[in-house]
Length: 119
Length: 112
Image 1 (cartoon, each protein chain N blue to C red):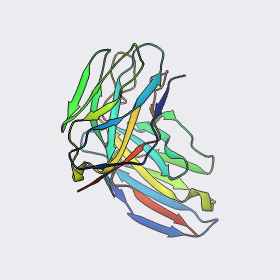
Image 2 (tube, rainbow over the protein chains, first blue to last red):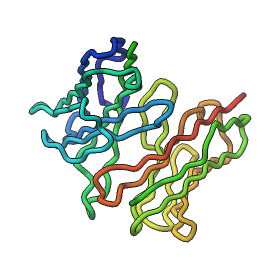
Image 3 (cartoon, one colour):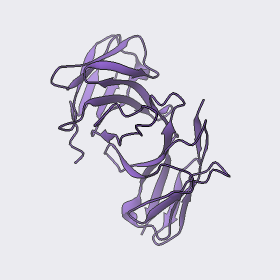
Image 4 (spheres, chains in turn orange, cyan):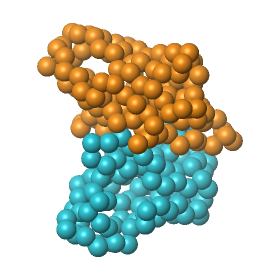
């Protein structure tokens, strides 16, 4: 158990709909990362938040958005869903924002994922 | 920018066989290098890392040596077990150090 929790575990919805995925980081971790994992694209970094602020952005679509709340949990909002959005969505957390030169990279702890199926 | 290339799977081995999963990288400078593992139905977890050239990371019988001459960080294990069946990811920081660059993952299946 990594200490990172994600809800829901599974989500089935229809095209055009909007869903919200939730992540609670490990106790004490300030950074949250979101990833999408699909069979054809592999593991894709979406976005990172540190202590409520966006720190890094990856291949995140404009239809997707995220935020980190004062209690450090994070939500990933996916809207106007398409069939191709079906994937596993992982949240990870780390103690720092951990990507600064000289600071060293902090280990990321991954949650169990949310499996999204768009029909 | 930085990039990583990982050997394609799937890799299928018998128990107690020797494992090598190749990972090569291109990078500015000498960034830290990582191997993460994803067991079936779980999220990824850090397996081992090396923070500078010639470092050897090791964990759970797995080893990887940071070789700057060949820009490689191959994952090895002398005797695999069924419980090692998983997907293995090589990763390194992007050039701006703001995110990790991930390999596509190599699926390993170990048969008894």
